[in-house]
Length: 108
Image (tube, rainbow, N blue to C red; front, side, top):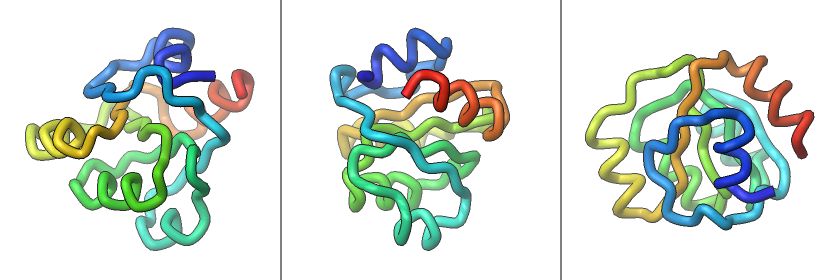
């Protein structure tokens, strides 16, 4: 499944999508950056509520397919601008992390 297909099927807000055809190769959920760094895999979709720019550094370092920000967490200009500058796929949803993971699991 691609990032664009995922966004469409789950009704996700596309905050910034640099690679709409990027294939999602699994998923990881977590809010502790160091934990995610040690456990998420390249190509994973990351489900989180974290909205600081360090999330983008982790996503870039791990070559993640996209980040889904849950619970409509506030996304400031710094984060969206950084996602654009780094070419990272950033999505948002009103679902909580459990709901987002359950919906994602049904699709992958």
